[in-house]
Length: 356
Length: 272
Image 1 (cartoon, chains in turn purple, brown):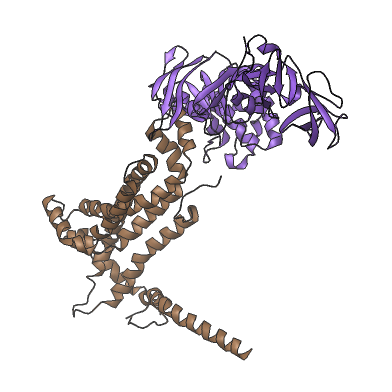
Image 2: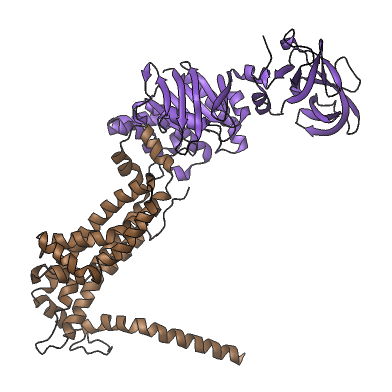
């Protein structure tokens, strides 16, 4: 078990593409850490640079208390699960799980015993003689996990561990993976482009964009207080309402309505300043009657989310969304009012969160 | 209706005539060795084994088959080992001008084992003391076959996902271990194809051994075949037909065996 630390890590691909731009990141021992971002943001490059499959152009990778920047992947004492699991098709499950031990010159009997022990722990005991081609996606994933567990490495790296599973299985695997990581207590870094996955599994996460880390924090921090409008727009299964407005004393003028300055920005704004007002649909209270500091308009779309509805209001010439619990959904064309929770609304100045 | 029937009849007649061009020589090869005093015509054999007795008595016939086998296996071995290593490297390392290099090699190699380079190759063998050496023939044949083998194998290697190797690398496997444990098993059908192709090529090659081996005891079957004449200077059909059959059987058996075991594929890729 070991902490991972990245110091001013830079990766420039031949041709000049800067995939990682001087990243600093510290992942403490035993943490389940997510690298989240849209495709092409450098998250996979970052993971591969930690693994040593990509060579850093500058900066340092420290695992435990050892600088491994120039060390080959095999010497870093890490284990990795690939997006396609990379199970060797010509070996059965036992040999696949035992392969890292074979490289470490562990005797045949000893590594078979270890493979069976790990396999049994992940419920693979009936499948040990099968080839990967004869396994379902979920079983293949468990074999891949068993293989990294057999290495007893200092840290695990998962590249999009759930993306090859179908939707139903993905939820099960999510819970399974989180439970397993907790039990093993091994520092684990995983890459995902799915914000829900990152929020659900990670202890902490980094949101990346174009080679930069835009925010690091716990899922709750990242969800409730996105540090900038990029993170605000990326996190959350329904996108945050980001509305342009101006400051007028202790109220903000947004989409032709007046809303109170959010608690987090109190005393930090100057009169007449142009800002972006952000509030998640989940933190908007919907009502049919106008309320204090509400955004009023016409209901244009109602989307069913299962136990709730996502209501889209046309306020002036912008759209504002609110989540309405079941039973309270309005009909299209009706007048509706969304009242942001003052303790959850946020103000962004030049794209960055305004807060003390 | 009549037109259709006539058309069909015409079509099948044409096919039959075309097929006859391929079948009759093969029929001759199957029948003549078992016929006493064979001629150029295909006859129903009288199932004599005298011809085989005659070929057994020929001092160089059977040893020449062994020589052929040695040349073929030696060349196939070298071709498979070097082609696999080169193809893997070319497939995984990005070199500027890699494709141009491959095409140039492919083009030149058709000359190297061919007639055009006969004189310089002979000179080279003389200078290197490789005249009358089976090893010399193996080296020259290997050189001629390698480019095409690399070309075909590279295609196999290209179609195996990199993540297998990267996975092995993260577990600490060395490049040679990766080749042995992961790459070779994945491209085994490709290696088998290349090996068979190399053996068949060498087995049928006449020019290089004829040029470089003057010692009859070292000459392969393809060259010995050329010496099977009667005292009168006529082609000795008894020996030629029998030896021809013995000469072709091993290659046919090899094809059947490999095709059964691996199936022939000239493209890579594994089902995923």
